Image 1 (cartoon, protein in one colour):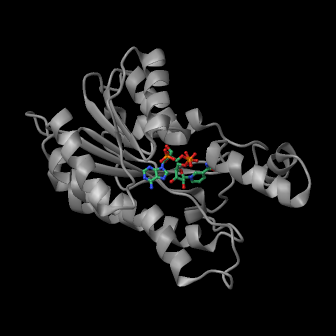
Image 2 (cartoon, helix red, strand yellow; image 1 turned 180 degrees about the vertical axis):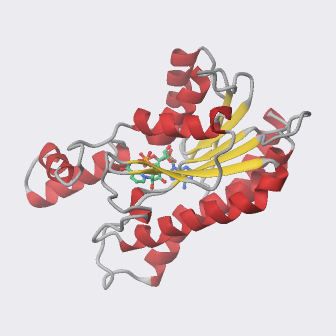
Length: 269
Ligand SMILES: NC(=O)c1ccc[n+]([C@@H]2O[C@H](COP(=O)([O-])OP(=O)(O)OC[C@H]3O[C@@H](n4cnc5c(N)ncnc54)[C@H](OP(=O)(O)O)[C@@H]3O)[C@@H](O)[C@H]2O)c1
């Protein structure tokens, strides 16, 4: 299938490892010009080298903490110098804090809100002018935004109340933005991963294993049981959904959330 993105420009934020990295690599392998961002310069340098080895192009990289408004502004300035218009924006920054409701402070709620919701809000706002410029001469949707959310938005997990709430907020953001930006030729969709073996879960399993005196593999095995496919997802599997929604193959799809979760979210909607 021709995804139609050869020569187009994509910015992937949270691209130094995990789902964002695999998404950037998949986009680059399809011939898109990819820009990458995350906090750590060292992680970005490794990611850029790995993407260059897989795709033949070394993506320009910028270090920014997108929970900080000034870093998002600096990222937008850098990206504008690299590429005057932007065809695709992928935001892959976020995570969850495992905790009961009672143990969470206002500070926990606010920090997680900045991490999961405001990072996406600020990135979309900063890059809207560049995405608007992507409109093609013949008309039709041109700019595309893909937000990373979570299957938890549709099926709240126990002991993860903060991200259940914030990821549901990202769903509402996606749906509302899609309607507002459609007249500007911009599509907005969300990819909702279930349990996926990235550093996020690998580190979590290691922490849980240490506390419980068992192996990380035993933790992963336990958390696989309630997944109908009986295994965690691989980040490259999630990246295929990102690639599809960011591409012209999804030209009439906007305001949707696509779960990549091995069947864990069992609701009808
Ligand atoms: N893995 C799962 O099981 C799972 C499940 C449901 C939803 N998700 C969602 O999918 C998305 C990606 O998850 P993942 O598992 O790939 O995460 P991950 O393994 O933790 O990777 C996160 C990426 O974002 C960067 N990053 C983290 N904080 C940042 C910040 N403040 N500013 C800029 N970059 C930042 C990291 O690089 P640096 O450390 O160098 O900044 C890294 O490149 C997240 O929204 C997550 O909530 C994941």
